[in-house]
Each structure stands twice: as C-alpha cells, then as structure tokens.
Image 1 (spheres, rainbow, N blue to C red):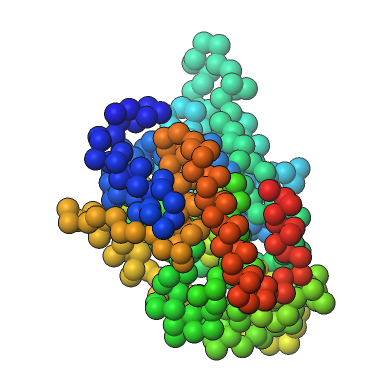
Image 2 (image 1 turned 135 degrees about the horizontal axis):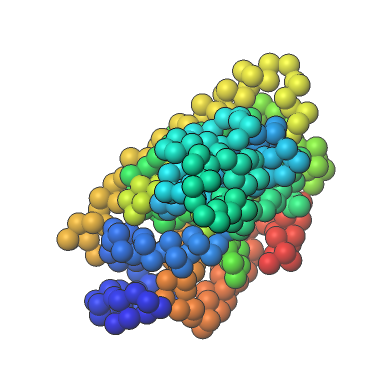
Length: 402
C-alpha cells in the first residue's frame, strides 16, 4: 500500500494502526521504521527538509568569520557570521563540482573549495573562480552558495522569549557524541519516564517523581513541570537560582519541553540543558548537550571548578543511556522483535510516535484529539492525588504559547 509517496506492506500498516490506538491499547512502532534506509530517506524529505532544526547557539558564532560545517541527514551545511554581523546558513556545496567548501569549525575570511579553488565570501557570494574567463557568459552572481533558511530563538540557531529566558544565558559546556541508533530513539528516550528509576537510579533517578509525572500534551509537542533536584551529584546545587526565576520557583523546580522533531529542553532552577539530536543516517545520530548558565555565574569565585562538576555529571547521565540506545537499535532489527505495549509512563512517547506517523503517512485528527483528551484526564487525576508542583507560571505560559 502506498502512503504519501512511500510503499508499506500490509503487515507494517497493521502494526502502525496499533500505534494509533489509545495509550492503554497501543503498541510501539514496528522495527522496520527504525532500521530501513528507505524510511530514513523518506523522513529526510517529509520531516527534516520541512521542520526547523536546532544547529547551535549564537554565542558559538560571536565574531566575524566564525563558522561551522556539519552534515545533517546526509546534507552538507555551513553556518557562519559575516562582516555585517549577520548569521548565514548555506548548503556546503561548491557551485562547480559540489565539493564541500569548508570542514570542521573555526574562523576565516572566506571559503575556498579545496578541489578547484573557487572562493566564496561570508555571504556566500562567489569571489573568484580560476579559468572562469574561458566560459562564455560566466555569471558570478548566479554562482553563490545556495542559502538555507535560518532564524534564532532564545539564542538558539534554527534552520527553519520564554519562561527560562535562554537568551540571557551562555553556554558553559557542550558535549557532542555519536550514538549508533536511529534518531527517533533519542527524543523517545528523553521522554521515557519508565527507565529513569532503573538506568538512572544512581545518578538522578532516585529523586525523580516517576510514578506521578504529569505530561502536558500539546498539538505540536509536550511539556511538563515537576519537582526534582538539579543535575549535579546527589542533586546538590552549586549555583544560585537564575535571577529571573527568583521568587517564582523553589530549588526543586524542574521542567521539560519537546520542540519537534529533535530538540528536548530541560530546565532546573539554576540551569538550562537542551539536548539536540541530529540524524547522520538511518542508524547513526549525533547528540549535542548544552549546559547554559546566566552570564553573572561566569564571574563567580571557583566557577570553573563548579562548572566542571556539572559537566562531568551530564556526561555520566548521557553515558548511562548510550548502551541502551545501541541495544534498542540492535533489538528492533531482530527478526524476533514484536512491538510491546505502551504504558502510562510512556504517554509522551505515544504522542511523539503519532506525530511522527502524521508526518510520515497522513494526519489523524481524531487520534490526536483522543490523546489530548486522555492526557487532560490524566492531569486531573494526578491533581486529585497530589499537589501541583510550584512552577512559577511555566505550565500556563507554555500552554498559552501553543
């Protein structure tokens, strides 16, 4: 059967129909959707070429000529700051033979293709092309690097402010690593409250409200406010509450927001930690974890020592997940794998999977409305059992911004 340009056999479609059911009746996605290269190729066209993707922080490109080359979903991209102070994004392909004109990251005055020495300025304009005079009617203006849409929000750079005010923070640490798994497993894992008390029990899961987690499902994502200690050993905070949150939240404030398709932002009273997943291919994903702190913290005594403790801790947490993510990828590729049922602790995952199916196949408004109704009922039930966390208005603000 063909859906939106992709052909799936009836057994896969039947498994997908099970994922579309209500949470208590649904099952996870079939393994084929995580392991098939042709599915990934289709995702590139239906998701990654149409959604906004986070590719960095503005302070990583502070000066004229700062640049970074990257590959996302197989597409070579280039971000830089030009002489006017503007951020630009291009397809990193020379207009002659398609060779990448920049690699890695650094600072430069121009980009020179390593193959035939075509030179481009920081606005993507072609400045020089050896032997181009031999080409009749050669037009430099038509040979600029192809542009990619770029915008910023809260200090994040999207190829495509808020309660936590990320625009008033700076990156204190950046952890980048590759994981041999499909990109969908990253946001799924970051929403998975089921595993927190198991894999992360010795790091932060021991003081995490696993059994009474409140999922606030939105049309375009999900968010949650809850009580937890900060992301440091034994939950001991080393920094003061962020200035704009003082008086609004306690030192147990915690929140999370999923920005589709591949960004999860975690907040505590003293920091912000976004996780960004960038797909490399169908079975490899790059993860970038930022730790962001208010500007004033950087001038505090012993800042470097405190910051290193936070940096070491987030690496510990991330590495607790790495082996499981690889195992997930291997497991769904087994001929013996059959998708298991979704449980209440996987409410956000169930919502994400159905967003994904909306993009891959066709939107199911009825299923979305049912999920949100069930989610609202679960929130009311949770509120009847225990008090709501003091969130300083975070939940109301995020809901109003939908």
